[in-house]
Length: 173
Image 1 (tube, rainbow, N blue to C red):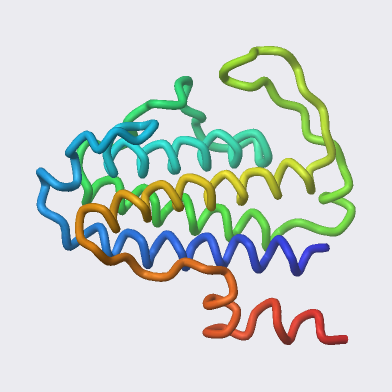
Image 2: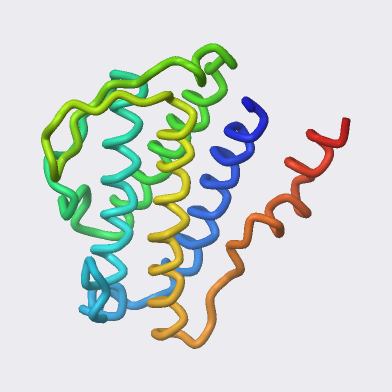
């Protein structure tokens, strides 16, 4: 199961980089315009992506500061948000690299932000949720970017796999 999570961490970093490269070409007014998305703008949506990752990474690793709100703004500007995104993606890749199969089977205990009750579950499905959450909100950001520019880069996992070979060769045995 570890190769799956390694691939997802690396894919997550790749997809975020592609998305941020494309968003970086927008004007400040486009980037911060309220487009009616759940978190308003691309800025709000990308901040939420980072908030979610930081919350989950803190739960999993016991390190770092987890934002207390799902709509927290980590950085007020794109350049700052990009730096924070890159640092969090690197920390996520490093965290997953250090996991063992036994770690993935162990339970994680955490308290959700919205419903503060103690939750215990195996790490593997919680980690899978964290990566799926990223894909969900990256899709929202992709739609906003497409609406604003008429174009957005492909973020499909299969393109990542074809480009890197990861997830194709790893499980061929």
